Image (cartoon, rainbow, N blue to C red):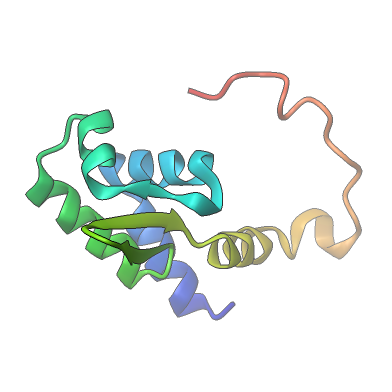
Length: 109
């Protein structure tokens, strides 16, 4: 991943509402969530949701697909994994890190 793409993705995620939307979409998996359902679940006006989804889509973190009258949004796991890889590629001075078994034991708020 090039640095400019990483910056674009991190900038998009550096907003509370967009980060919340992205986390919900990651939890939903590849099937995604309909825009209306997402707005209702997060109690966000449709226009506000549309703005934030546009920003996440422009950063290639979210994809959209139309099914009938509904638009479903999904996390772009390829971009997410590339970003995580970019952020950790020089971890531990290039030496493979030992597995961390406590990262998932604690709830992150």
